[in-house]
Image 1 (cartoon, helix red, strand yellow):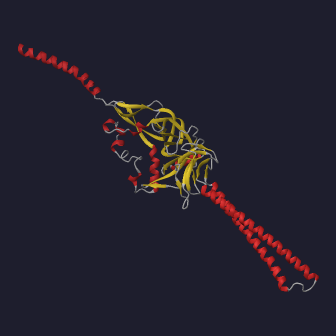
Image 2: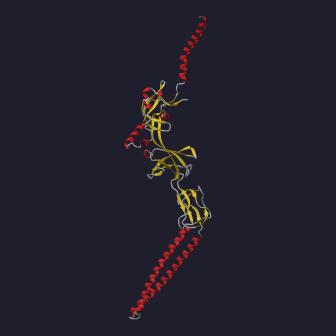
Image 3: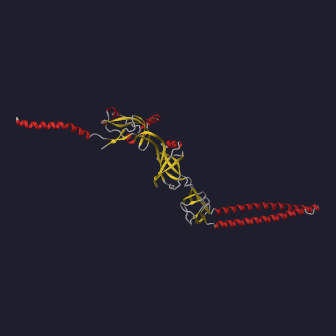
Length: 419
């Protein structure tokens, strides 16, 4: 009996210890394995919506400077990046052939003028002979025969006609001289506008051949320091928002890889209706104007553009991570909200791609797009999660506007699960 007691007493003590420790141990194990949720607060502030695109820096105008005459280049006065004024001589073509042509045209003009003087002298003599013949016939009838008078008359008419021909040949010779002088002047390639030489396509000694087409020698960009254009390609799905931004005169910001720390500002100058289709993607060119006083924006640079299309001021906003989160298991959610997980609400996400609803009518698709603003976010309710229905507004990179819902500034929303 005593031996049995010796065994029963330790067993009873051990059982009591186990019974006493079981409750705290289970509570510790449950607390250790409890899910810890990452949360983020509902804040208040401004929300701005942007449409992003890429574009290329281009001059407002690019003036091609060519040569009208042929010949070797004997003088080259400008190089890349040189600033020129209107009328500056950029290059000169060898003028020797054209000077010879001018001399030949001047000689031809002098010959025609001398020929005119000779004809006028003969004409004056013929007129004098005709007048004397008339006077002689008036003194005595029959002194000159009719044939002799006809000869005098038609000699005057013939010389007058020759004078007209000589005057016409003088005009022709002067036109040839003007043409030769123009070609000689064209030997000097001058700047048509003030600007910067952004391209030079010739070298000294190069021979130009302008018989078939005008060779391009330089490209001059006027007003490159005053204004440049950024040509952006905007997707057809966003072009309506950009049109609205242009009507409201909203600003445009962009950066370039050459100066990544600088944010440049511009305005929408033109939205062109000529669409471009590339691999079934339709885009529209949008022209943005910006100042360029320091020449930091060079032609050909690639710009990363953000169009400000809409904005709100001092509104409650939700972190986008809270909008993207939803529980994976129904047991994490309180019972009245489990239909959101087990049912069709999340499976038929209104933000899904429209390609999944290709069979819907246009009206049904429009209604579906309207439902995109109705969402659910999740908050911690004791040991479970509680769903809160909200309606969203404008969205930006980190936050989305809260238009309606049982939320206040400072409320915590679940954004993920901690490891």
